[in-house]
Length: 125
Image 1 (cartoon, helix red, strand yellow):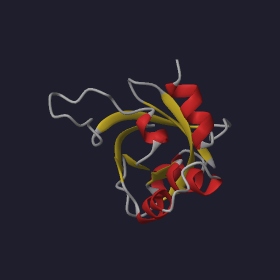
Image 2 (cartoon, helix red, strand yellow):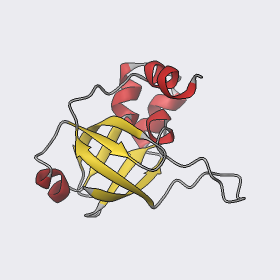
Image 3 (tube, helix red, strand yellow):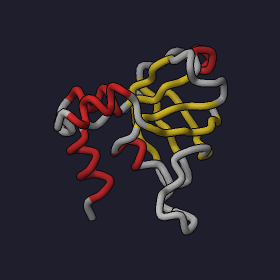
Image 4 (cartoon, rainbow, N blue to C red):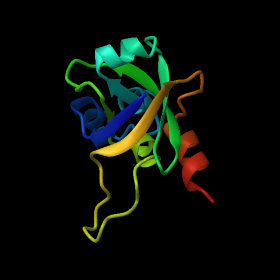
């Protein structure tokens, strides 16, 4: 499914982050999530996990239906999972573009990596 990717902070992600728990399974459950409109999620077969791909790369996330997400859009909380697929191009603003990025979402049997695993895989050269 083609979708528009938006990212941002959530209360749960912020609570875990500010509590100093970024390297815990709780952080993965709060931030390693792709929120999807229930109709879109149903059309994909109600998967437990999805792979979200952009021009930058792809990442496996837990799939969560969310009535607050518009049809044709997805939302990923701030964190290394979102950062793995957003463009680093700042267009001279000093901040990456966290909203309105084109993405492809498909069901996945892949593993949602813990934060440390994800960082080692995506960010260490």
